[in-house]
Image (tube, rainbow, N blue to C red):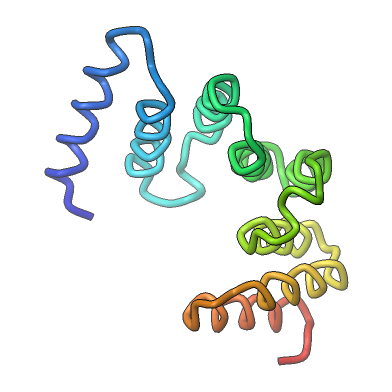
Length: 148
């Protein structure tokens, strides 16, 4: 990470937020800033991320924002709650969206639902066109107990 650029980005986000009229881009930048501030995923302020996704969804309600919020809920409250939030979404809207299946597979694996995780990994792999992502998902699938 380039800490100088992150600091500059933080100042820009703060300047926009001080106007007290954050738009979707400012909220997305604030989400990125919270992630950049954390030394690791475990150190991320997930409650702030969920709150920011709530604001973003109020301004731009769509399935991808709702999915990202559900993932953050899973980080904040555990995989079962994240899965409940994901499963509450309209499945037809995200069925062709690889990140949905990858996130669902990860939450299922973390919740100990390994057979379901393997199936979700299979769908994510099927939808992946990037070779590096495919390898990563195949490794995760194997770790969940699926045959390579």
